[in-house]
Amino acid sequence: MKKFKKWLSSPKATVVLFSLSAALLLFTVVGAVRAALRYKSESFGARIEQCCIGVSLLEKCQNDKEAQIVASRDHNHSDDKKNPGDQWTGTEVGVLLANGEGKNAGRFLGADPEIVPGKTYPEEISVRNTGNIDEYVRVTIYKYWTNPEGEKVFDSGEKGTSTQGLSPALIKLNQTNSDVWLLDQKASTEERQVFYYKNLLKVGQDTSILCDSLTIDRSVADKVSQTRTKNENGGTRISTTYDYDGWQFCVEAQVDAVQNHNIVDAAKSAWGVDLVVPAQDQISLAD
Image (tube, rainbow, N blue to C red; front, side, top):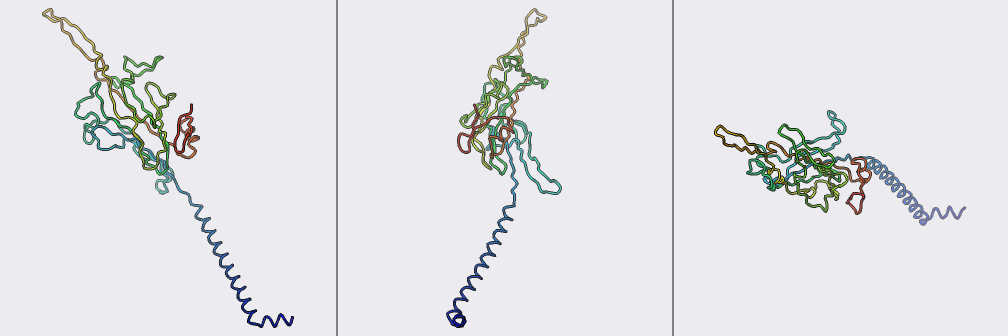
């Protein structure tokens, strides 16, 4: 014991004890800093980012310098007290093939006063991701005819033909980029065509164009009727009328999108279709 007390009073003991005190102080400081970092990390991890899925239908006609947004639909999460909760915004219904006054004057027909059967008109349709989450998209095209009274005349029947011979097939949208726009043969009919864009559509990007032109079959103008009437001088008057004078062709396009996360399950739930993922960021239709 005397030797230990003597050692404590020596300069060597003073140095050793000071070193131990510094080591304990350092351990205490490091421990406190680590605890503070763990606490901040837990708070940061509790933040949740609200995502918005959005999609727009684009159209470019012959007099357009760039593609125009025809219709759009964006899903936004709002924290605004006046407009709380989730909301859908955008112009959900637009007009394709517009050719009216103002900015739409001559967009589709150009200098033609009315459409010319057999003539090809530029008509490009594509899709833009206007949300903040990557997505997959599909486009459904509808084609049909209406009579002068505005009544839809397409009647599929057993053979898929329409009233008075006016088949939707006479409205020809020339599909392009068929390597990325996949036609769903099972879901398509003479009046409806369903296309899936196989590539992941990233935020702010546009798809390649689905079609590049529209043509009304020349045979529509070939269907005429003639009537013969006798005049007072015994002659015969022949009147020729077009069978489809006053009829209108109609084209509708509907675009919708699903999130890229769990795309197989998401597509089955939203679209009722079976998809497979053959490669990263690509989809294809199941056989």
